[in-house]
Image (cartoon, rainbow, N blue to C red):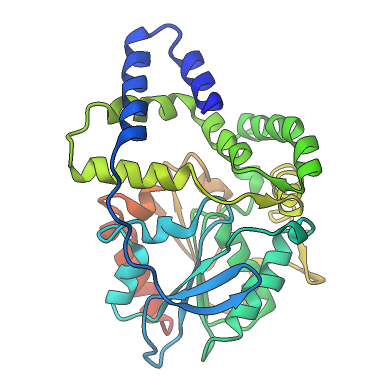
Length: 337
């Protein structure tokens, strides 16, 4: 809250009307009654604090495993009864699964991004009846590519996934580097990266939009689908467990600053992560209007789709079913899912 208020004050110092509307939207968001979340999917497998949740049923085809980012909870892929990519895929006949990374324990501080693949994801994939298709969203796509280079998978798709960090604007990388320089000493002492640090990085990329969306929320029709969608997305975006310290170092020092993935220098389990060497079918879905992961930062895979939806909008917006969900379902079906 202090960080948000600081951004609000700075961005509206010359516009008192916008400030008043944004405050009204913030108050409405805080006081609104939330609808019940969709029913939880059953647990299929577990590794440490991570769980593999099943949304579909065994149909003899390749299981389709969705990997969310380590940042924010996995619920963005199952946001509500009517805005759920996972439930759409299950209804389309896919044996769909969702990885819930869980909350790191005090013993997990040294588990880096590669460790999340080898110690959490791969053991859960071993429980599946046949080779899976992996679908990763945001940083989950980065981890999905690593898993696909360590295990034999049927196919892999990434959505809004960062890989070549030279594809980010220089000013965005400089802003993130400054954020990490300020936060790193505290994170090292804590042994983890608090969600607030990660959230401040997202806000810093587009502070004006952060304020504008709360101002717009103040005027939304009560009880409307737009109101419910805004609250669900913001609850997701403002929540989530911390990141392990080692994963934070990997993310900020090695990926954002060092571009180890884009240079082919990221090593996981002693193997260089180079997607161009993968034998399996692969698809990269990016967006020309994504402010969190620019299309230029997406991995270069065999198949490629460029949309015109925002980073979160490509998953949960009203146009997401038409532009992404159905296309992804067709691609997965074509490759055994």
